Image (cartoon, rainbow, N blue to C red; front, side, top):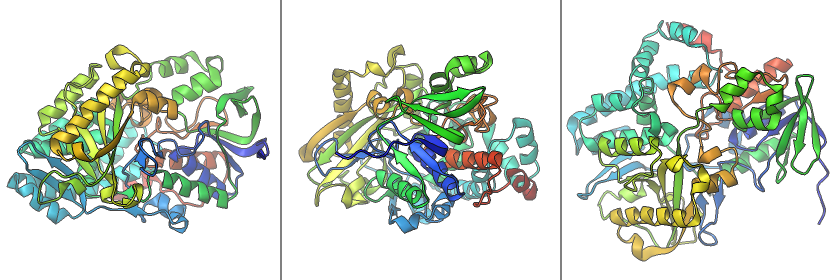
Length: 541
């Protein structure tokens, strides 16, 4: 076998090939820098993982499944992803909640059809949905997305700027409440309450839905009811598209050889030591896609850090919630038995029929207990993308919210016996809502938080968001005071992962924001012209 030439140096060394690392690498490579990405896993993509874990040709997305990348998404257009052939699919049926009495609440990719579906459960809720959707779209365009696509402002400055516009004041009003209270205040039917809270929980907010300061996520959840997409062929195809563009602009990627150490000389990052002992020199900067605690405490080392930084990172707030996956290979399409074909919805809410159901899981997960009822975020991806299974066959999955520290333990708690028990309980939930799954099943597989951590070490304890969304771990406090602007106390070392603002969910935004910070510090022209958040917020007033 012919070995690749050893990677020896680059202008920028990026630690980790997750979506944020690949996004940052692309922006800086297009700015004329020589960029090298180093990855510990055999394949690239981090959470953009698609594998055949049940049977050959049956593709399962183990971490990221749906996302909101569209052909007019800033990263998509900037990085010219259309030219790679990667394709996003917008399913007609977006979200569905089947009930025990045979009814199905469906959100479509059309607001009016969604309103009509909601009206079958509660006419006032249908009107509330329409009003909140309009509100959400205005807030997203004026406030939420611009603040996500910029390094976070300090709280005092942010609040002053927000207070100068009607949109900003509305955002502040929502933010002062908990997501749970916003949902209960705006919707009467338990089915609609459950569906919106479920959609918010999918963003990583389950453990904090009842915490004041999270109400703004309802605006994102309402918009998310009707605009989710999947990647044709599986989520990994997006990672391949990002990698292809990086290669086209002179970047390199090395896999199966992760970073053991970030080398620091006189307070400056000079490169990395890989797990095989080889070294890669960074002429200008090292940028880590790995969460801040793992980057600074493990790769840099406490001896290079101020005790206050060490203390903050040792007490870092991980998300407290992880996902357990049960994956199925099926001989045909499952069905709820409804005329509306709810099973075709991209996201299925199985087992959450009231706000109390969501609150039950919130309390049990937050206390470290395995939820007493196996309620699922589920899907049959092949209903909307038949390329993910052999002709006529299907793949399905269920994800259940579980504590990241079950019964106070770490992810090693998930033994094979415990994992199989959990998987089987989740398949039972599938069968309860779609009875023909029992006859269609060809194979089943479990994917526990331990499996997640082993496959993607940056997802410590199975934390796919790299940290809690509690208000005390958001904006300028994420991941810790002094680290929120993507810089670190080590000169030339930056953070670009989801432990920084605005967090996870395969949005690529931490990588985008960090690329701007690195470019500014190095005096490199930002060809992508990132917006100035201060000027934008002032303009609204």
